[in-house]
Image (cartoon, rainbow, N blue to C red; front, side, top):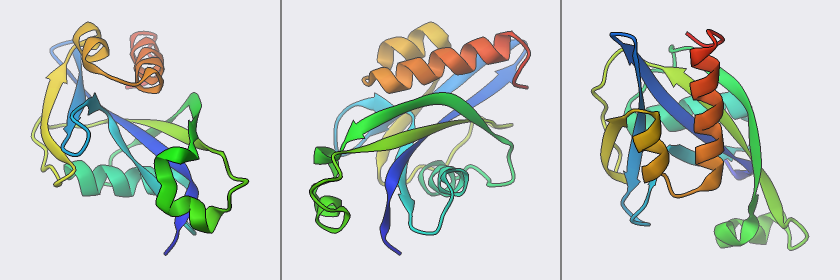
Length: 151
């Protein structure tokens, strides 16, 4: 399957004892912290891609409820040089679709893409994250949970 012209971002969270925690992942190839991130494959919907990436990168079951978020950003295709050859030089940006997933366990199985993960409250997660798109999505998830829109 070929690489689709979009990216997904997945924010795992857990609510225990009325406290919300977010899983932030340390990338092994870029020495930075972010949420689960990956590319879609041709023939997949963004939701299917999010579920596959969450399972591949952290062992998160695809049976969990994934919430589609409003946060969507654009990523320059210079980050995906190998795929620009098939996408064409006129494809300069791709969208990043964002999802949140409430999981029941703090234990995850990491792929080689990550060296570590940490469960953090909102402020500490925001401080650790590198990309603004991750921070905006975190803000949306945290507010929706606190408003009772996500369980």
